[in-house]
View 1: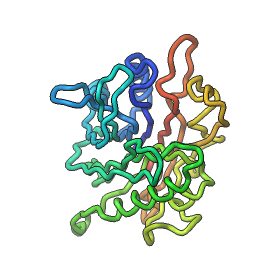
View 2: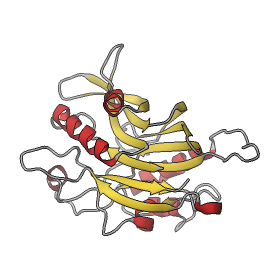
View 3: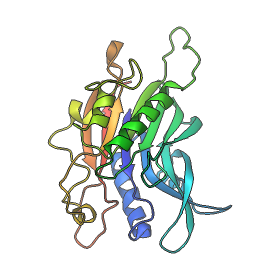
View 4: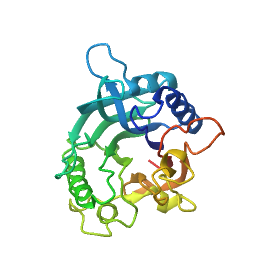
Length: 275
């Protein structure tokens, strides 16, 4: 299964032009499941929904949920949240708002989408964590909430010959791979939930630094911060038969064209996972 993640950067900086680039970038990777963060939907009945528009352009199913409403630059109230797009049916979805831990409430959250994959069920999680440079404490608290949310998933025991849902965690996590919050997810630090640990797809099959917040991106370079990897696709440790094994990982939405806006201030990650 090919899984991708991308922060679409809400309605910042000429979002209508950027949305065309987002669709082009996603079409180019042909992913089975796409997790999006910083997604918007105009509040009120009949308002535009970014996840729906992207899903329709790519002929995919989608789930979107958010809780916090923020006015955009034109004063339009928009819900900010996360989305999952899938080539297969999404049978259920649920949202967990994440605590701000004393920082500004940016509407960070994690969305679970339960997907009927062609070779068994998949639980795809799209998570957006605090991005503030010095807010590792907030991200640590949010990682704990994410892991407990994953643990809370209720699925009937698989029948003989059936598979339990494959959990895939994706998102814009803010921290670098060696940060405390990421080490908690990969088992290099005490895990929040016993036996719940993930494998970083880029570590398994990526080449090079894999920076998704990159000084090559004009939106990101304006912040004058160094490049780092902040967006992730994470798979469960491989099990019998290689289920969960990451065979390929790449950065996408990083093709820069002179005079054309990048899709986002973030680059995305796409990975192929055996399941």
